Length: 198
Image 1: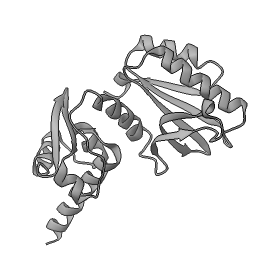
Image 2 (image 1 turned 60 degrees about the vertical axis):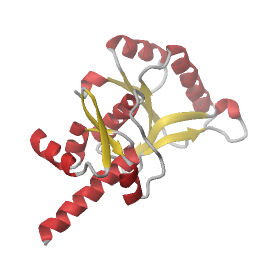
Image 3 (image 1 turned 180 degrees about the horizontal axis):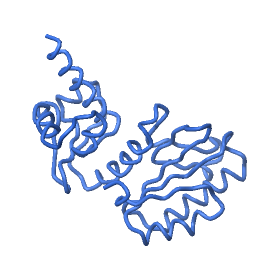
Image 4 (image 1 turned 180 degrees about the vertical axis):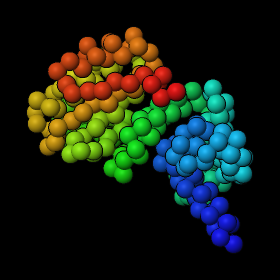
């Protein structure tokens, strides 16, 4: 009986992780839920096939299907898409930073009365009395990144943040990391590449 209860609890936790994070790779689920070996993680996810769909992108990428969404009251419908890599990159940072309780995805920040200062960050969380503003540079043009960074600089100039901010980026290549470093001059930042996590 206890084993069945534990199994159900694990199912719920994995489904809730997918509700919060949208798309997760097998290795990310393995890390988040301490599933041990690759083989065990694959077995666990096979048992969840009633609630999740998956596709291959280097490794299996999972997301909630209709039954999974119903079970955990998720409203966002996710499908197989190349945009899933964006979520997976963001989730790598979520896991690397220890799954912060204050983590929020897709947050609009800026002054409500001034649309020119508003920007949507990929995620934000509070750690060590600092805002950590997360940005994912997957396929967007560097001009879009420059525009976003200029908005952040403007918000800092205007005193929008009541605590110091650290900008955390994840990008695809070393070349793009160097470009972002130039754009981020004058700000407190950390820039990772996907290869830092895989």
